[in-house]
Image 1 (cartoon, rainbow, N blue to C red):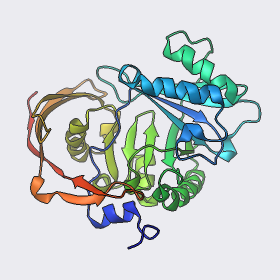
Image 2: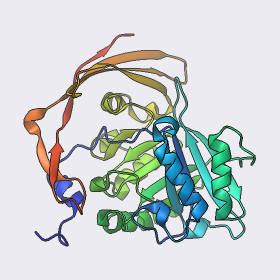
Image 3: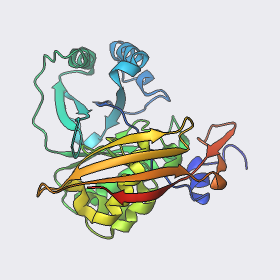
Image 4: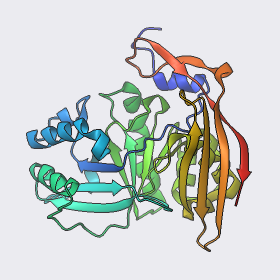
Length: 320
């Protein structure tokens, strides 16, 4: 198969890759409204001013401390003529059901970098807007990986239609730059919860947006929750399938209790609290099933294949 015919998402689907555990775990997401087209490196895009590009480099060079991820977002029908939006989602410690959510408006994209710099240094000078929206970010970043164009763009258009048809007034749908996992396209992040999805179709989308229908649909499309360590994402998925859609109203915290050097074995603990203040704690072992390792290209442009090893959940136990 030639490089022009190869699509990494098709390859992953055909191999039956389980996508759970692939949600990113950034502390802060900063999503900036910026029209397409976007360059392969999103902050090199023509709509991004030099001061924002420079700030992006500084923040990424200090990632270990700041744990911050920039994204570009756009929806032509949502663009206001007199301001640019910045959406900021920040992790909450302890028991939580999602990220904190703030929205800022500036008159021009040139003003985005100073606002973000002030925010990251703990001295915001701009008042955030009230926001109770749900922001559904769909990766359409085809210049980064062609699967995000092939699968992401039509899914984005279909999702706009689905949200309009169902009058989901509090849901905003955005095109987004690279969110990782292009071989799971179409991919999306659902904020403010911060849950990741892949291999999406409209049937699964409707269930996710309305939290109705068959919970088992998440078996194939749920990548995990960015609030949790990657290994704990496997345990959380099992508990979602046990508890159903009501799980999304629960507050959760999780930790990795122990793991070996190569993370072949991981023991995790997850605690949750229901709206009725009932609390439970579970532990499980997340173990690599090395006998089922396959070799796949991680992106459409990859020259080499890499190992992809599935994990299985063992010894799921309620301890409290």
